[in-house]
Length: 211
Image (cartoon, rainbow, N blue to C red):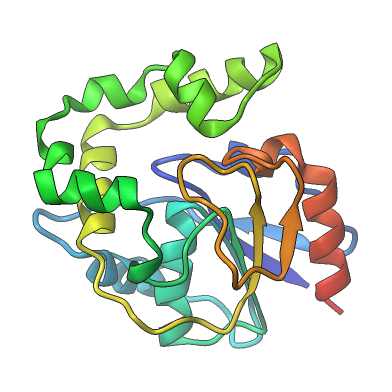
């Protein structure tokens, strides 16, 4: 059984380094470079054509990857769609995102600032121990600042009101995309980086659902 994996903003397969479900082969989807003024939907369609997943495929998306996964599901519905630490439609965006979008703050912040680990990013992602902080810092520093700025703009302008048929997993301590009511599995104390910090619990859910 194959599980296609979409990570967060510009993040690579390291996001899934501790997700190891028995009998399931993880297929890591690499990001492609966005085109100028490309919408989230347009980008997802172009990426879907590159990936060309098999008919009976399973899909998991984390954070921004969950939004792309939602757009994938509108093209071809996966057998199982896991949305982890993400939203399923544009109206689920937090007040913080909506407020920042109104002021167009994402246009004013230099991309390099968004790729540096610090106490603010540690707090927002919910990382606490030294190994998690180190990994988060490595991931952020390796991320293309132009990709992050494009992605944030694509998120705040995402036009999707169609809620996907999905298995939703979310932490109740997520500071970036807070927990919503329509969640199938709530991870107590889980933050936005719980794909790393709570990988064992998430792996067990995937194994339970992929039958």
